[in-house]
Length: 310
Length: 290
Image 1 (cartoon, rainbow over the protein chains, first blue to last red):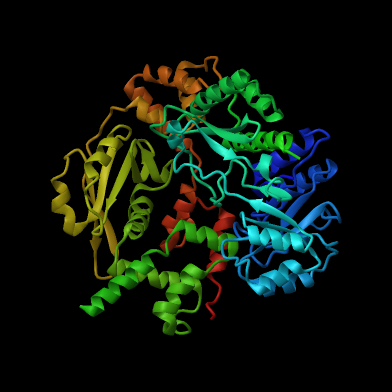
Image 2 (tube, helix red, strand yellow):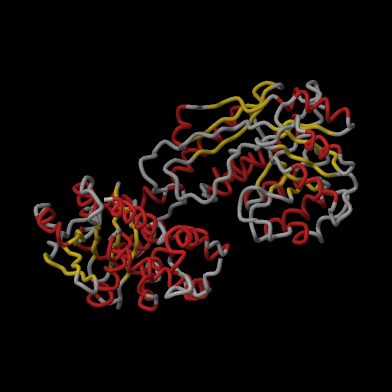
């Protein structure tokens, strides 16, 4: 299973719901969603689409980035949508093992032994209290960067372990991608079960740090993942060339899009997302940079869904 | 000496309060930390005396800055209070904060019958980038002004004599702004710079206004098609079309007279609506209690 880790922003959520609608009968994806907005409108539009199309998801109830603070009860906001068996309550653990353990023990809703624990950089997986936390009956999933002793401990508990990798570092400026045509993205889709993991996770072609806002960029980059070999997913960057100022973002998108579509044609790549790009190219239409990000994510989800080595 | 360093540190710290980022957070999340930190550190004992609400404190901080540390915020705010409101007037006028031109950002610009760019050089600023900035402003604006402290007047009089000069004068009770030299009018305008400053609908309007129609184009080629057409418009006509478009750009210029005098520049920079502004005042009128 692939557990893409996505922040609950508008275009990430649109990518998820469109993925759910276009994936067909085959699904190898359980997204992990970290809510970041105080308004839950985009979330309330996306979750029913995931549910209707049987895409199970994990919802982080103690997000660490974005607008949501402890005064907002995410479960209360979404509870009419969060019915049993279609979602996994998830918590990020820092070094607050005991607090979190109490929180999970006191959960008001029926967890059905489904909780997911996501380790962070501060987590000491050898700490006894951490071990007590993940040993709780309610906990079924543990997400961590590659960690062999944790893996065998989680397996000894009969639970699921998922490795989380930060695959896409991102360039400082979009124009930097001009000198970096492509880079390796992942091979976990091929090797995770061989490496004895039940699933793998990454941040999709979005950088792992959470950065909000940002003005008009100097350069436009479209990121598309593809299977370079069956064992390796690579990411290609298609970047505008006239990047001396912030003007004419449409024209810059056109430059990046022309390169992207030429590549899709040459490689004969066809996903729901790639066809959307081809339509913008055919109609010379600029959909906005948010849509461009959505297409990157949706394309990646479709690609990995069809490439997971089970 | 030690006293001076303490004063300077306190002023630098105060100076960071008038930031739109912090005030947006205050409005959005009720996050008073950026003010609370200063109160705790410097002015704890004043609370309960003459300072009770956050607004009292903001007014106090502003008056301290006026006296001891005239930063860009104080200049802009005085400029709005003393020149825009008292002298230029707001009728048919658009004022825009931080306006990007070429490789520079003009501190304030103004569009009414003419176009003016203002570059603020406080006692705390260097004039290192000034000549480049003035060169950029001249590509678009009919008049460019340096706004500086009265003590620096001689230094800036020696700059480019096309540029106008406005000085901040300190009187015992308040700050005044006085224009000491008019800017020379510049009628040339650079179409390339213009294209990179205006928004899509603005350059389309300029083309439509001059040619009477928009050519067939799509979102990918419209920039270059319009740029070619705009390059053909005579300079004086283009200058007027540019001013007309920028006067139409939606800003909250007409509202600044309603804002409290310490907060005018902040209101302009944050482009606050009436409701947001009254929310801000409600939030600031809360009593400080630790």
